[in-house]
Length: 110
Image (cartoon, rainbow, N blue to C red; front, side, top):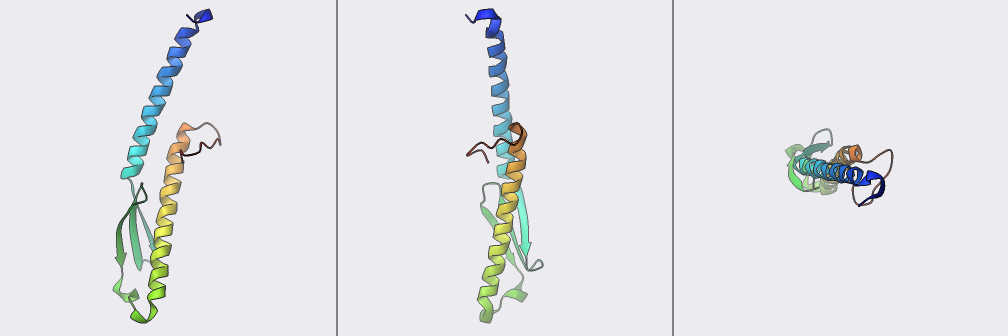
């Protein structure tokens, strides 16, 4: 037994922790299903990425396909992918920060 009737408080705390864990798991599932889109070169390159940082699609305007300047196309693709990754990270951090008090950072959470 817990002195001073603390068993009820401990049960309440455990229920709250379980509820928070379930909410976090649901939020992580929603993030995994979220798709972000990023562009570069004024829309010449568009990429879509999911919440797991998996690249889903790449669209390239034929205007930027120049065999004499492959490096520019590579740079545009990299820029779009990097922007998409930043959007995923920001979205994940915003969603997960709802579960963390203040500015506390938990390693591996986001």
